[in-house]
Image 1 (cartoon, rainbow, N blue to C red):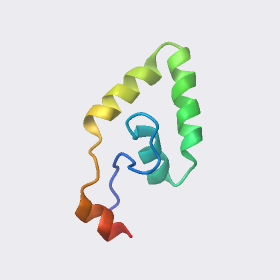
Image 2: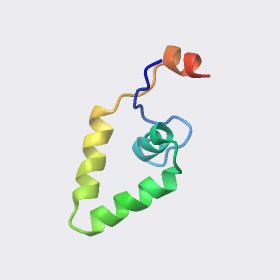
Image 3: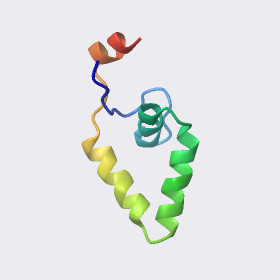
Length: 69
């Protein structure tokens, strides 16, 4: 079965990008959020990456979410 990156529906703070990345790599999404904050404060790359992720990472549709369970 092919793994796909989706925004998280259950573990989201703003758009679900960090939650989805955390679920994809099977790590705590808090770590991803902290890295995004660090990169944002270190020049803005984290904010730009988050906005791009919010635009291009798809929402999970109901059939994919049902099959994953």
